[in-house]
Image 1 (spheres, rainbow, N blue to C red):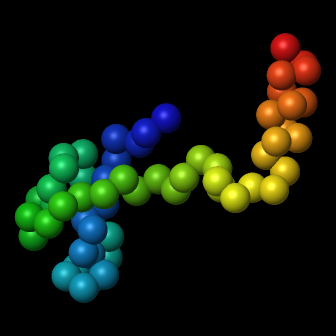
Image 2: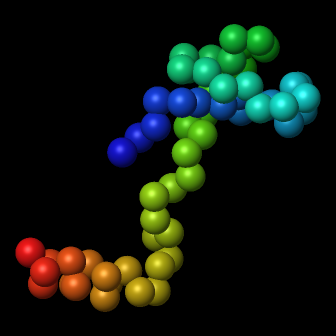
Length: 59
C-alpha cells in the first residue's frame, strides 16, 4: 500500500527539518515531494521464499 504522506525531496539541503505534505510538491520551496514510507519488504530478502510458502500453506 502506498502512503499518501510525502516529504520534500531536498529537505536536507533546504530546510531545518523534514517538510511533510499531501501534495506532489513541497509547499515551502516547490521541490518535488517523494513517498515518505519505507519499502514494505526488502527485494533481496533471503527468507522471503519460505515466508510466502508458509503463507500459502496456511490458507
